[in-house]
Image (tube, rainbow, N blue to C red; front, side):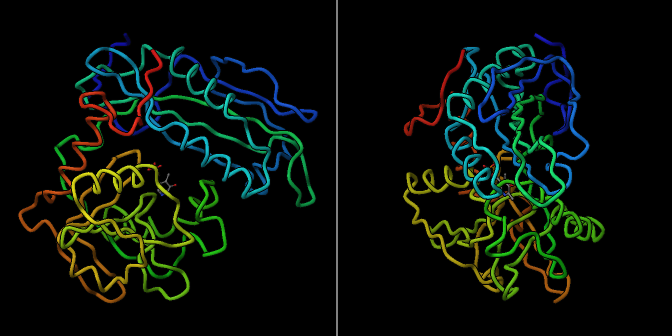
Length: 339
Ligand SMILES: *Cc1c(COP(=O)(O)O)cnc(C)c1O
């Protein structure tokens, strides 16, 4: 195994040995190719560069105590990538291609799958781009599907500690009938000014509100929002939210724990009634939230008054991570051992 300080790794890019590529040309997908180069050769007029034909996924491979390597709900990542491709008229990939590519990407970089117990994992980044040239605004005729990997450390190096969020009202990441519900790079481009504003104010991430009423909670940076009160787990229902696979899993675990689960619009003013709030996504799994500052209204909402994450959030977080690493039984068959 590679010698790295696994538990101190950042959530960042670190070169591994190989990546996987596959081209769609002349109406069909070719063979998987293994490359040791971190660079791609791209036509200067590729639609990915000009018209944003680009979609990606983010997932992790986990090493268990038994040294086996596990993928978590990869079929959901595949389905979401299909939806993303359909949403911006890219050539969808097949399920076999997706599975072969992610599996191969993990196995040929096996020495970078972090040891169990370090809190680290091998992050996988499947990426689909329009590689064919166009100047008129049209979908490309050629596509490139890639998977690269990078080991990432535990998100919370100092423990499961609450983060601070700022509400931004002067920019939107997505519109209701736009591309917010698919995982495309354009949503990230449009989220950068909001994120910068939050950071400039000294906050960890922005909270976006619905772009029509500026009233209902949409997303927290690139993560879904949830709140817990009266034994109920509540997460926003909105057409501009990216359906998080982590959130989908948490909803199930909350139900397993005997909580009621609601998906509905959440008025920002409802924030003061929640006992626990948090953000969720593959990178951090759950980020408990300690403070939400509505900049323009100069209003603060405080949670975790003792500086610690709430009980239910902690319980769900620990359960989900234990399933992912194979430390606990997997009652919903979410995990697949690939080696
Ligand atoms: C990827 C992503 C998430 C989290 O989804 P997971 O499947 O849980 O990783 C949430 N919001 C946005 C905008 C995203 O792009």
